Length: 231
Figure (spheres, rainbow, N blue to C red):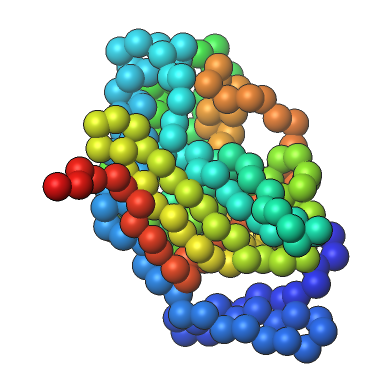
C-alpha cells in the first residue's frame, strides 16, 4: 500500500500532509448524540429480533451501512459504495473489548456455532448498551475488496458518508471527514475484526476470507438530513 499523504492527530485537530508538500488541517467534530443513540438502539433491536425470529429474520441493517463517497481518479465523478462503518470504543476501553470478544469467540468454537448465538449477542450487547463507551470523534470499518474505494483513498483521504434510517423516523446524517487506512497491528483494527468474527459466519453476513485493511473515519463536518414536514 502506497499512500500519497500522511495523517496526524494533534489535540482536537486532524492534519493531512501530502507528499507534494501541501498541508491541510481540520477541527474534529463529535458525532451527534442522536446518532450515537440510534446506532446503539439499532444494534440492540437487531439482537432482540434474532432472539424472537432467528437469524433469518435479519434482512437489513441501515444504521451500520452508510453510502460512502470518494473522489474518482478522473475527478469528474464520485465513487459510491455501501460500507459497514460503526461505532468504536474510547481508547481506554479498546483492549478490554478485544479481550472480551476474543474470549467469547474462542469459547464458542467447541460448540455448534448456531447454538451460541445468544452468548455472542450478549457479549456484543455489553459494548452497545452504554453510550459512555463510544468515542464520538470517529467511526470504523474493515476493507474487504480493495476496489475503487480503497484505490481512491490511497490518493485522497477526503470522504463523505450518508446514513439513512428506516421508517418512521428516517434519521439521516451526512458526515464529511478524513479516512485513515489502518493495518492489522492497529488496536482499532483488532477491535473491528474481533467484533466482526463474532458474527462473520452467520447468515446475515456475506462471508469473507480476509480483511486486508481497516478504516478510521474522522468527522470534520456534520449535515443533518432527516426529513421533516413542511408547513
